[in-house]
Length: 449
Image 1 (tube, rainbow, N blue to C red):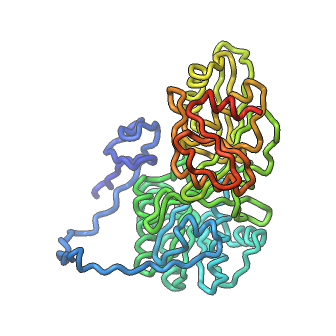
Image 2 (cartoon, one colour):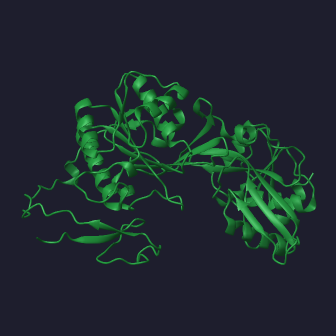
Image 3 (tube, rainbow, N blue to C red):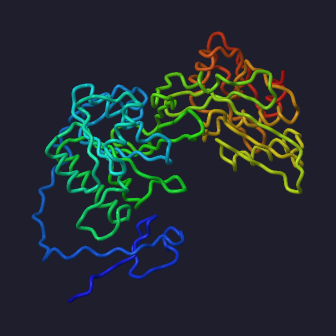
């Protein structure tokens, strides 16, 4: 009897090796290679018939119809609504609210009269019902199925023909004809591929929940994100109320949009005005607080950046950043010390974005520098001022994109002054005093009250 062949597959990147290795040669992670049995041969393969190519000029385009779910923030991220036959992968940390979000989406779609099949591969039907009662989900068109056998899921979906299929989660679904355990590279890859084929053949909008690794990436092979049409990450600290839904891939829309939700007792609630929500608890006349305007997709967001400077009690001063890039903070501290004359070599510096939001764009540079300088000098920043600008290594304040939209958002929320780069002095909405600055030292003198 011929011995079944085995191989070793990396759980992180999908690298295949004929023998076990302690460290993956592709991604460099340790102890990620697991043994997987090779699929039995299905007989002699035959070459398929050649397909007839079509000229690109003869291809006709049809506009993809979108069905709004009723959750405006969710529809914004998708690009306007659900596309029939699309496959959406939703990832996020444990407890962030992935199941809650898709349960609410399924209920909204079911209330419109369309059938939705919610497959729970981790929980029983009663457990899902308990969550549904808390969320107020009770549509008779929302069908529940507690099953992790892929063949049963595919057969049920084919019989019921729902408008939307929700699978929670892909790491617990398995194919019986594959010898490896659920969650392995082979299982996740093949199960996802089968769900994609079902979605395309039956025109079923499919939502798949995926677990994430400790680094924040979706667990399983990287090819998982290539198979689906849209990849959404649900971000947020479980200890904060606000959650951000962000698209990193979208074949039917933009990847620049975000959706903002607040976790409440009745589930996730849309936040139509995130800027006002993020600034609602901002302390006035407190040193170390500055307001900046960031752009997420097409949406301007006013957020508060807090800085705290205190004498260090150790030989090496500490630098901590939450919600902003650590390396960017270290760079700005060097610019403050060299170009603005602030002595931070013996000070611990802490920088944080209030509300659990993360800002990646350099337009927040000037706000970070102002907040740190305000804390060091123990002088508050003008509470009516918003600070916008990128800071260069020479201490210059550089122009940022979409400055007009940022200033309009500041005016809408009642800010009276805006410190902006000198090159953008011409963009001044009515009711807002625009103060152009060319260097960091000038900005620090102006914003201190």
